[in-house]
Length: 234
Image (cartoon, rainbow, N blue to C red):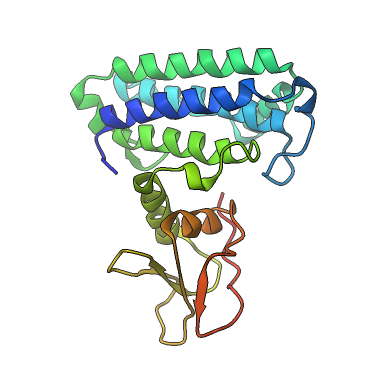
């Protein structure tokens, strides 16, 4: 997947439109029902998608203006905002996602070329990483809304980048080697060892499994045995 933030902004537009179509098909009475993300209802997921757009907009504003603009006022404020918004009616949730996405898109369009290179202390990366972070949030949380959208709907490029990212930062879980089908270079998690299990399968399935959005039933393990339990991601 491209690293070009302008191309990724277009991907965010598309992904947001797809999520909104799914949201519009939800039963308005279902927002208090559990989502696929443990501990969160569908309303929590929708509210988080909107508030994350505003958080990412804050980072772009920081990079463009030089004025420190944190993603959230505090971790507690983040949680409180999600809780407060989770019980709103579906129509209000949808309008909130639309409006927050427009703010994010406007912030991206306002970025001069140099601003994309500004390293943001809040994330330890240049602002050019923000569109990917937003795309990841939209695509992964879209899956949390139910069966209408699954990891199988992710693009191959998105799934591969997500897989590589999770593998690179995974800590606290078992060591293993990942072999996505169709790729020559395996990915390592943890401290490499000849005793590590080798987990293979479709890239989308591997990414979903590591992200906690798939059960890994179509993955293989060598030597034969049970799938290792990966560290919890996000």
